[in-house]
Length: 109
Image 1 (cartoon, rainbow, N blue to C red):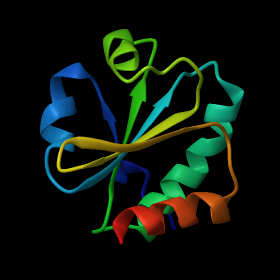
Image 2: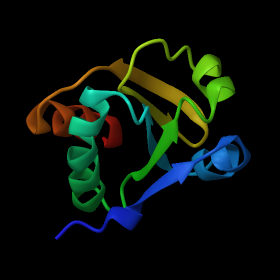
Image 3: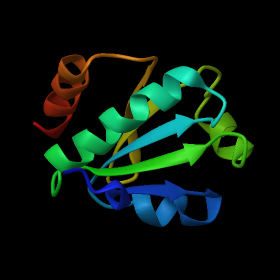
């Protein structure tokens, strides 16, 4: 069973404190974006699978345009990986569970 509370919804005010320590995946999304909505359950599932290794959060680009701009988010879904506050990788678009897991496994090595 997936615990949806493991994927935190962030805003500008909580962003730095959430990303400053450890491995973090940020999912930039919008409520009107069908691919984003399709990726939602996968993000929830991965947050369970990578519990203790990666923290997961979502940022609504409509509510947080300054963060979207800061990370050059022009297409969504858009995923940014951080390690101890530093942006490591960014990728865009829907992908399979296997593709996503492969990226995350490389990231935590």
